[in-house]
Image (cartoon, rainbow, N blue to C red):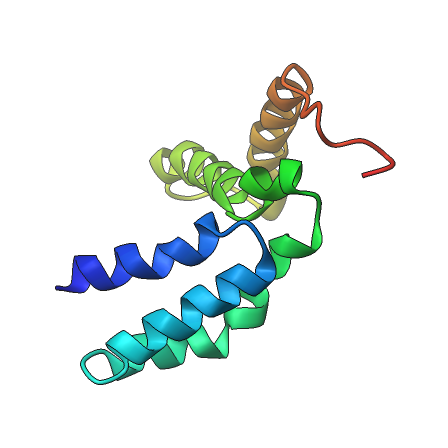
Length: 120
């Protein structure tokens, strides 16, 4: 049942407009509030932030509606720093983190997001 609740909530992200997404949320909230009131309250509280991507051109929506890129960067930093377990000083930690982020930045340069321009 919990999976159905989450799947149906995700319909907001597949809407073709902010207005349609808000309608989808209202339908979802009416259905699930009786059995999942905390889930509905949580989404309702963050609804504006969850739908912020609708303010941008549709070509950008897929890339900006998630935090996957940011989460991936943090996972890579953790993957590189955990085996070390302790650093001799803050500067040694800074060097590792800088190296990881610098590497990710270089790899992202090779994969530009063509739909993002200075005018978009």
